[in-house]
Amino acid sequence: MALAGVRVIELAGLAPAPFCGMILADFGAKVVRVDRTKTPTSLDTQARGKRSVAINLKSAEGVALLRKLCVQSDVVLEPYRKGVMEKLGLGPRELLKENPRLIYARLTGYGQSGSYATAAGHDINYLAMSGLLSRLGRSGEKPYAPLNLIADFAGGGLTCALGIVLALLERTKSGKGQVIDASMVEGAAYLGSFVWKSQRVGLWSRGRGENLLDSGAPFYDTYKTLDGKYMAVGPLEPQFYEQLLKGLQLDAGELPPQMSFSDWPELRRIFTQLFASKTQADWSRIFDEVDACVTPVLSFDEVSSHHHNRERGSFVKNSSGEEFPRPAPVLSRTHA
Picture 1 (tube, rainbow, N blue to C red):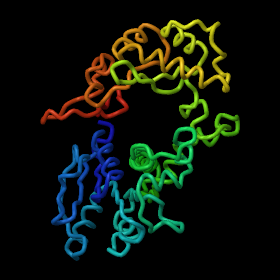
Picture 2 (cartoon, rainbow, N blue to C red; picture 1 turned 135 degrees about the vertical axis):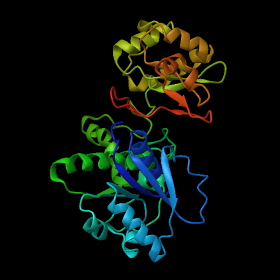
Picture 3 (cartoon, rainbow, N blue to C red; picture 1 turned 30 degrees about the vertical axis):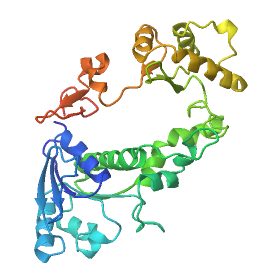
């Protein structure tokens, strides 16, 4: 496994840090989660592959034990607000002095500096501060909060895991550890780099929900089917759009041009009416035969039985029969 031999101390926290620790564990790191004493851990759904130890960090004995663990480890992952670890005598200065090779990863919403460094928040707040929330939503409606994935997990846990791997790689050259300041606001904003850069070419010149990639285009949206399910439609390029029309049995010569913004409402009406005439299974069979960027919107109960996912083994079961996504990406030699 790619991270075999890497020893990680994960201080128990909410979703982003446990996800980061789970990624490291999935790829071979030995992760020890430090739980608070007298605190139930049953709600931690990301404990896969980790060991757990309960330590009272408010006691001198607990602090001494954690320091000992960190001396023997490669990474410490902490999700607390700025200053908490320093008050305990467990800040980067103390721990890196005792173990100069330690990677000290700090995963917070707003980062270790700035006016909001000690402020509370959740995914919606970090997403709002990144600028991305202002772009999410339908035309004429308020910005909507998606699932708490962008800031918490992608901009938070996943980005922090990348930082840890980068620091471990750099350590092979310098022999030194370092501190990682992982801010979910900045992680989310970094994920949005394409949106930031593409503003200059007019890709987001229209209002929220009225552009090519934010459901403004009728050929980049979801449509309800006869059985109350949905199809995801995304043929942006002309060659794929042509295949969409073929699957819908429409004549391009009788329709407005694909990129005629003023005609998008009429195209949406036509697509809505047609997709509502057949079941999701019917449309899936049709579009499996053409390369049109049209796929079924699958529920969690359906994903593992879809033929493509089943053929790849994209979803697996643990010893308790619980189904979950296979760790990604797939490495050819050092499997997760």
